[in-house]
Image 1 (spheres, one colour):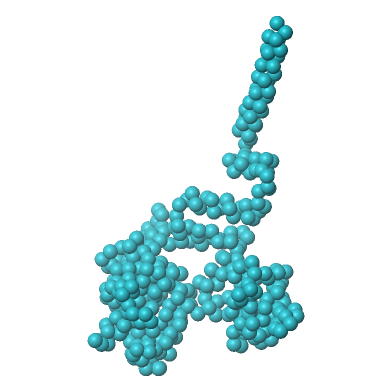
Image 2 (cartoon, rainbow, N blue to C red):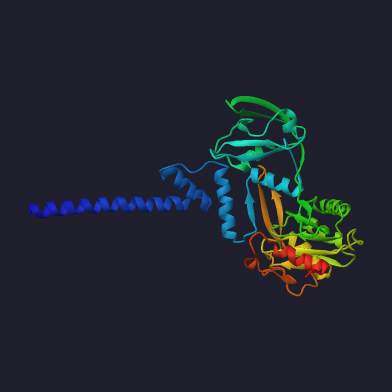
Length: 386
């Protein structure tokens, strides 16, 4: 009998322990479920209470939330940029920024060094090639400092001063500078005469920025003075940029007609036309594209092809036919949201998703090392060379 009582007692004790664990589990389930918080708040509270380490603090936590939301949104062109990256992107598209005017390079040890541009605020203040950055304002510069963060620290409003300290060879004793930021141009176009035939002017357009149409006109004027009579607009690996600037690049070379059309959700179609003959309508022209030519660069190239103004030479382009609106958030970060589609009337095939189809297809894999088959094809087309 005593054995039976002992067995029953032990069994009851075990049941009570199991029940207590089970009840505790159910209790927590019910407590969490009763909260009026959002699902995110519930998960965050659990991490704060029970996690081995604390959740990240704002703004890192908020940035992670935004990125998670965009991942679920599932659009590769709707993106979030943190403040430093957003500032650099804005500068790039504007074609200028407030800064000290110096190239940044990282040496083999990870040290960030400065190379002032000629006649820049940095050079005028006394900075020299190879000066090693130590601090910018209150930011300590280490090998782990990213280029975006460093550039954002050096840039700012024109007329505002920035404090920095550098180390100079051989002893790298810290030297302090206070430099007033000035407007620094970020050219989107470089140009040269073709070495193969100096009658040909080559304009390499790296980005479609607000200043690009004006830069193209200035480049062509210079090349004409140096003897160029035909031109190549090289849009290879141009990721695009500003839609309006892409339209204006095409307008430079067109007499009349529609450049492109766009439509936002629930709105009427908007048409972009050539309002008056462009200043470069009579110049012989070829356009180079490849799979890295995208967005606003495809607008410029596609409009010239649709109007039979210039032949496209190269590979099919990227095929991005959407428009992103940029919303600056309260801390200087930004949300780029896909909001519209665009297309070019007159093209035989739409731009997206397969890209512009070149008039002259080039296979770069079959070219000799050091040669440029795109450019060689343009010379043959423009001058009839064999």
